[in-house]
Length: 209
Image (cartoon, rainbow, N blue to C red; front, side, top):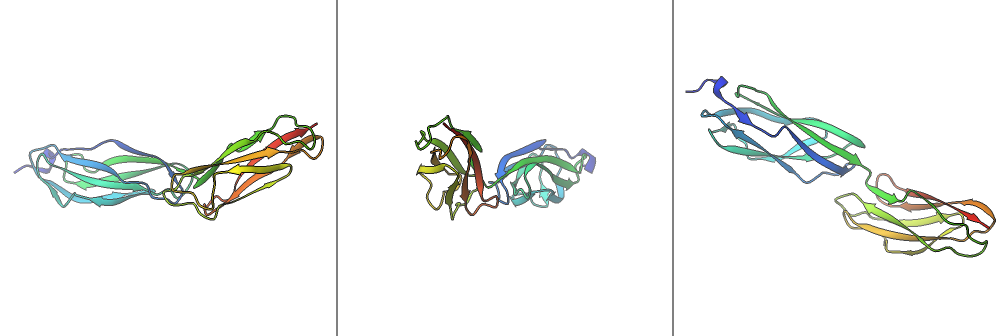
């Protein structure tokens, strides 16, 4: 029989989930727990904190010598920016409890890029070459109810965006500038949709001559 102090385990020190859209759940990442000792590991609990959750596990109450089990963890950001959490194992290993640092970044559900654009000087009443803007769906679900509008001396000349956009998909919007007066002209390209950060906007400028 081995005393609790003789039990040792191996775990990764950290797991990074990178970018995930706000309120969306990432694909699971597996964390392997390995019993590196000759005794039986008795597992009391496996928990997470922060914006991370256990989706499934092959770990039971005991892990025999030399064997491994896996915990699958997901990331669901509730706010924007860099987020951290911890996967916590409580057991009879000599270094109990063991922790795995979890990290990920919450991003907006949809983006429109570039967020601004400057058109070259254009003669009043003539139309510029088009500039292209890209709408990106950062979610793992479809973006719906897409509608595009412009203000000022700017107009959509072509688009690949329909009323919906597939998960992780992109589409483009081409916009031209037709100044109605001389001097600096400003406007806005706006895309409304089902994303929580709707509308996404870009602020173009141009000069009439």
